Amino acid sequence: MTEPEDRKPVSDEASGAFVPVLPAGIAVGGDGESSVTSEFVIPAGLDVPATGVESESQTTSEFALPEGLAPPEPVPGDQEGSAFSTPRTYSVRHAPVAFTPPSGIPVVSLTKDVPWQDRMRTMLRMPVAERPAPEPPARAEGDTGPAVPRVLDLTLRIGELLLAGGEGAEDVEAAMFAVCRSFGLDRCEPTVTFTQLSITYQPSLVEDPVTASRIVRRRVTDYTRLAAVFLLVDDLSDLENAISLEEAYRRLAEIRRNRHPYPGWVLTGASGLLAGAASMLVGGGVVVFVAAALGAMLGDRLAWVCSGRGLPEFYQFLVAAMPPAAIGVALTVAHVDVAASAVITGGLFALLPGRALVAGVQDGLTGYYITASARLLEVMYLFVGIVVGVLLVLYFGVKLGAQLNPDAALGSAERPLWQLGASMLLSLTFAVLLQQERSTVLAVTLNGGVAWVVYGAMHDVGEISPVASTAVAAGVVGLFGQLLSRYRFASALPYTTAAIGPLLPGSATYFGLLAFAQNDVDAGLVSLTKAAALAMAIAIGVNLGSELFRLFLPGAARAGRKSAKRTRGF
Image 1 (cartoon, rainbow, N blue to C red):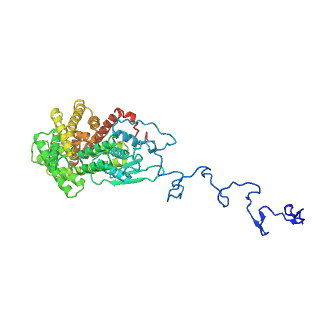
Image 2 (image 1 turned 30 degrees about the vertical axis):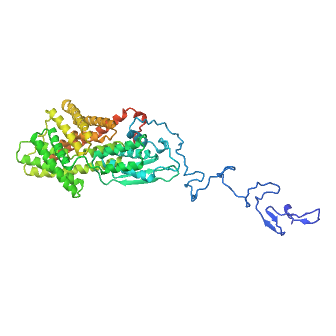
């Protein structure tokens, strides 16, 4: 048996000794014994660059910094623990102001002539990465600006007042975004539901977001306060006005402390005048006017008593609807020659939740379906409360032998001047009930008169469908309301809500309830369906008029306002 060639001993010609040949990876140590080494040992004669570290060669990553590039100074306490942590080659404290997405940033023209509502609404409908970022304000060295939590708190408090005052969800989000943007927080996302407000701010793509929320527990109808909040947001969004955070907090506190412009006895008298004016719209005379006014004022006082005892709004509306119906039934039982239907219809006008209905439909049309569903559900509960209160009285009236004639309040197209005066009085008293500023009462009164003239010209003279006539008249209200609000840089609600008062479906509601009380279910369903169609026509008409004004507003088309959610169902 012969040994392999690589293991045969060879002779040393100089000494004559035999030196064994070791296999690869076996080296002879200093003590003469062989030791196992790696196959990756650098051969003799190959120079190795000096590393300055007396250790074995280490395997590095291909993502290591190239030679000659100095790594950044390590941040104390910042350890890279996972793939989602901040890279050490990126400094969070000195992050860039903005970044460019792979698809590029589209050119967006936001002219200063467009009101802040349209500018903020346009930006809200853009993705965060596509929103044009404002120029960072010049600050002194060491000045980091206002604290983010305080800015978010101020934003939520302003949004709470707007939502509690009945403003639409889209306009509340636009106002919240305007407040944050005025303090340099452009990467924020406000969210509005029926009872909760939240806002999230993320400084950059690699920093943790900051989120704050607030619950809206009480709703107070005060359009004077609403106008003051809009003025504050307008001053904050104006680049020429440098309002500090402390000044904004001070003005907000003053807005909260301000008392309502009208005392309680004025509101009670306004509800009576509103019911009397509504009774004249449907054919009532002087006696009907007085009876409807007394019933509405008594119902208003009973509702105040229930509110002071902590009863929910459902029972407040139920109790408030009973006195006008009771007075109308009493006049019929006493055989007084008056239109009892006009008395009950006038009392219903003061209770119909037109403000909540318009806001709910507007939220649905703009894509805020959760808030719209909640608002419309609230309207349904309040309407059911009115229905229950009136039906209880009508049921007992029919049992007592009251001969209520469903046609007693019809044929009112013969008094156009009286109707015009009554519609304007109705809008004026409705504005007082909404606690509007005294400077806006005249404008909304004229707007209500214009709405009734349009409705009367189309329905009474042109013999057009009442639903179509109501929709067109409501569209005119929304159009003029937007015009007046842009002229005064305020919300459009004070100029539109009270003006739709003469268009509310009070008579259709009453006739439907009367048919149910007389066991005529089919006629009742027809009348209530007509009332629902008129209510939807009012809400859609007001929103359509506002959108048409924004569409043709100078500069609004250049703002690039995108559609709300999706197109053609996709």
